[in-house]
Length: 482
Ligand SMILES: [Zn+2]
Image 1 (cartoon, protein in one colour):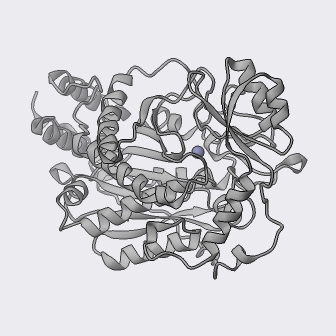
Image 2 (cartoon, rainbow, N blue to C red):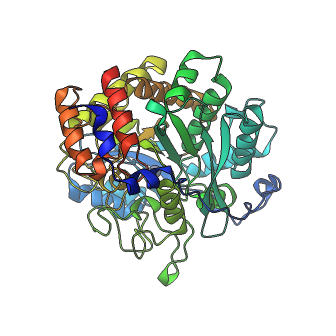
């Protein structure tokens, strides 16, 4: 078998490959946030006075559901029976939990103190370093402008689309002039964060990645090698309305700001994706629930905009949907206990990331499928990336002992996550076409068969077409070996 198969391509496929990729439509500028005066504004904002944060050891599924019924808000992102689980308990609820004879520790007797201290800190004089404390939406947007001004040759602003309240979901693309293999589309790593509004460490962490890559390109060997191999798209805040709401009104708001039927608010954007959408095992049909899935897949402008931008971005090889907290690297599936056949492939790279992360600050990130015996995720982003798009994906759950960890967690989180990402990029092998963790003749044979049949899996550069570029890029990377 030789690469001369390229000559057998129909003219129509070649012409299609020459057409420009689709580009996203421009949207109006974001609603400006002029200053930080809202931090000084009097209530009404949710003070969380009298809410306790507990860490409980539940014994079974029934007990989990009983505590959740008292709490309404489980803070452990992916709860597991074998590990303690955090719950926010409203005023007066502790006695009800005690009555269940559930073993628990009180992590924070009054989250009202935490919220008040954080607001006081953020409304005071800010430290010099950008990563020394949390940043509101406008500050994140301004930081992207700064990075573009620093290196306009390798950066561009990404316009994802409008939110429900007509803010613009924005991001940053970083790409060096080096083309992909055989002058094809360079593979893209797509990072997005804050589908869940209150997870403030997540946007800060992906912005740290942005700064390291932009500031380091051309001088730092790791950043340079990274950007000469992968382009990166970073969308720091997917849930822009919810994020603003956590700054103005309710620090621990999770969902978007949809006014649901019945007077409740918010759709959980990470239950609104179309793959395996709608199951009561892993999402809720109740608008009051923290995991309300919405009225239909992609009912929400935020998930729709992100999907549209993803489909208009050729080359996506890896996607990471960044959340907090718990220190996990979660792979598909979320909706079923049956793992995908390529679980060893996911685990191979998760272990590489785990080792690199641990080397920085000695934090252990546990890896494995998203689904747990206590907790399914249906309509989640991680299943859509892999199940619908065939993209290799993880949901990282970053560090942090609550949704309001001290700002001293921001830089270490960025440092360890960036190390994990670099290790992933350095080791990731697209030429392991069958994802069996080895790259050998089987990969070559299987690719060629799929390519001749023009199967979607053979769209090596992920631009929507199976054509000569896919063949050429695969052969180059296969012959490089990995
Ligand atoms: Zn989350």
